[in-house]
Image 1 (tube, rainbow, N blue to C red):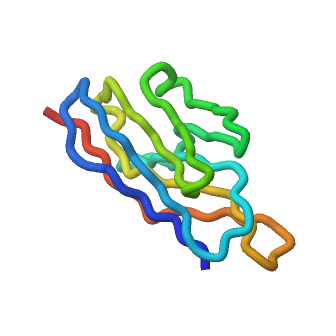
Image 2: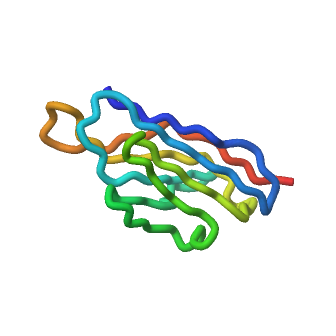
Length: 121
């Protein structure tokens, strides 16, 4: 089965940086779009950034210029470099990927379990 495992969350002061990683493993034939979403307490999950297999990126307006999404296709891994962090970036960050498993005809959406990012002094 396919799994997405995030890492890199933690506590950081305002203005600081963190780098999140998400590795996909399992019976993978191909990975299409990958992305990061976040959910703050009492709020709905929202898109942070996405990246296509070819490297085309898309960002939420709230993180443009501060966050950078990238991926290593050889490692089936997507990253989120977060700079100039603000208290309002505090949330659980979830990895998402559209993956076609071996012997499958279609891609499916997969989610990681999330990693908590807390921005506080």
